[in-house]
Amino acid sequence: MKRSLKNQFKAVMLAASVLIASTVPLFHSVQASAELTEKDNFARLLQHSMYFYDANMCGTGVEENTRLSWRGNCHAYDAQVPLQPMDEKSVGTNLSQAFIDQYKDVLDPDGDGCVDVAGGFHDAGDHVEFGMPENYAAATLGWGYYEFRDAYQETKQDDHIETLLRYFNDYLMKCTFLDSTGKVVAHCYQVGDGDIDHAVWQSPEVDTMARPAFFLTDEKPQVDYVTSAAASLTINYLNFKDTDPEYAEKSLTYAKALYDFAWKHISAYPVGEGDDFLKSDNDDGPKQYYLSNKWEDDFVWSAAWLYIATGNVEYLNNCLPYVDYYAPPGWAYCWNDVWSGANTLLGIIDLQHPELNLQDMYRSAQGKNQYDDADFWLQIEKAMQTWQNNYSTPQGYAFMSTWGSARYDTAMQLVSLIYDKYKNNDKPSSGSEWSKKQMEYLMGN
Ligand SMILES: [Zn+2]
Image (cartoon, rainbow, N blue to C red; front, side):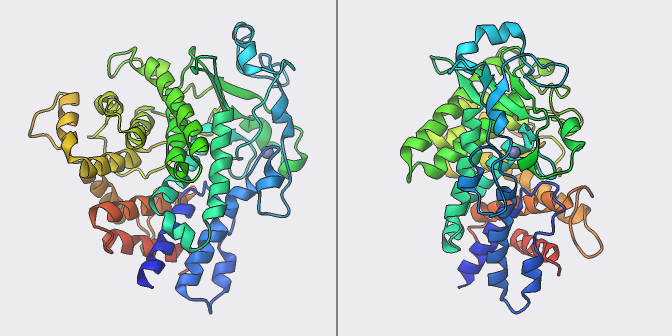
């Protein structure tokens, strides 16, 4: 009984950990049911929090997949974005005519003059599909399911989360355009324009606004988008490999292609150079809405997942020189900073594969000596302590930013629970207790 409550509680944290700047009062029905037990409330919170994604589902597959009766298909015209450089009405793509001419067969196999990038999920209060938070949400939901699948099964939420994970990852694959040799030619990382979208307040089903499509290519590789997508697809492989092997393999094939594309560009520069070329062109698509300010965290995150999925140590060799171990800990696990996630994975790999001597591999990759710190869990412990001590209200609610504070809080609950699972052998610890208290506060206590 105790274990079951704990598992359900964990699953709630995970599902809630990616709510993006939401102002929707999702928890009303939970608060209203005072006679329910704590266990019932956490189970219902898990169930209800996943509807956030049903509400934000986009494209021509919404009606087939959503569990909300009031949602319909939307932005079906994303399936027919004119394959042209963007015109003065923001119709088209960010691609040059020369690029379109060169890769027309890949981008437009049916030859209708359009490119199909329909699907995926809207951001939160708007209808744009922004790559950084979309990839982060996909990976984080997948990570929660990967770590605590039994809790979803126990509460019979596994079918729902799998629908959402497929919808996310099918879209990432659809947006990745491979040539006949399996190499990435282009990846669509954003559909819609924040300025145009934010000028309209209506339901997505009736939108007719222009929704340009933004692609990354060899000319502008933007490896933060590429590797965050690769991470999600790798987790998707792990989640489905035993139940739907063919689908899982397809996810892994795309993940590897994206990673290879990123590594081709990253490895062309010495460590610490090439940043202007490698990172996001924030002016091209995200504008002021989601400014990505680094790519190394996403790269290490994806490489660690690929090692876990394949056992190929090359992924670790490639990423260890880029680990920013001495970055000040504390910024929460979020779309723009997945260092907490990357360090957690390296800590897990170190625990489960002592034969690698990962800490020595890291020191050697970074040119450090034997006296330098290399315990990845230490970074997580520092981040958790910073969180628990430095960003709290008088009532103990931990916030990092007043804008969408619950997303950072719940994301650090996720990291704390995974820390407990591996480092504390699943015994309750201050991390679990802290997480439970935070979630109770969020539910109105
Ligand atoms: Zn839509």
